[in-house]
Length: 407
Image 1 (tube, one colour):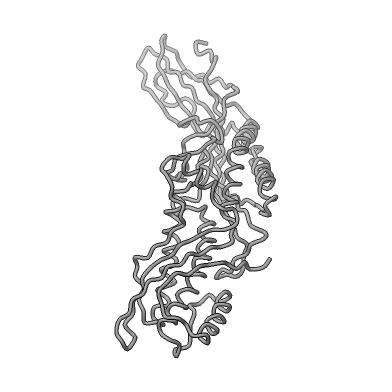
Image 2: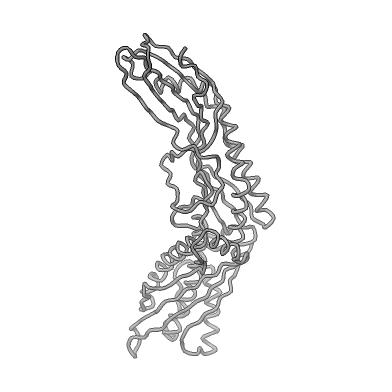
């Protein structure tokens, strides 16, 4: 793979450069593509020319690296998650505002590093735009994303440079750059949309099948006299269930195959990294008081086939505050885990129904790399990469259906 060059247009006020100065600056431009520290130009070159050239070259490099870093964050500074139980990718307005902020922040740091060498100051009120903001509805924003070119990312940068280290006193001039980078960000974005809308629900079905491999009863029905507070403890329930055969890796590998089927034809290769996985029981406890009274305690265990879906418990994962596109990984089940207890009086019988609902909560990153485009970063040359996060919490619920409570 070779490092891709970019085309750019520069609109700015300035003096007409002499031929010899252009030759020198051309050499500098070639050298800057492989440099990571702020560019330096000989002190005897015209001050304004020096400022303009250093500014241009550092902006070109900084924005290029910012595009890569922003893509690794899932095209959002709010969250890299595109899936949080439901498919919810960022769309035009979020990508535009977040991307402009992200690039502005990294660009500001770059310009501050070269200020001391130049003796010029860059105002902090510079503008960066990806030109994506379009409409308020989900459909309008999706239409905008689908209309973007597959072969490039356009970034507009404008700001004012002011300085006093020249004989005639302070000088101010504006810079306006229309940059175009040959990174296939929007093509990969569209392919991720295709994957999410066509294959994500299959992930839920496959993991539901894995949850059916949990061994042991999933429902405990007990009755006891009112002196008992809890009839079936959580520890006892967990001791009866074996989750060792539940394995989500096959389901994730299947999704990776689907993703590569979509991405490989455009020369992207994908992989996934499992960030976290938790297998456990979402224990639901419901109690009630009935008559006539009963004595002692009795527990009956059942294995009742139940529905499967996503539960709201996030285990510390925050879903991004954006409108969901869909589909769900699995149908939403709401909050499954609960502990509803009740005090019964003498002469009554306490009934307790405990569901041992097996679940798996996991977080993974899918990472797709362009085999035809490379970017020179601080750490070295690497392929252009668009990475997204996926979180889901899938549970198999054991409902108390057809349970003979009166026996």
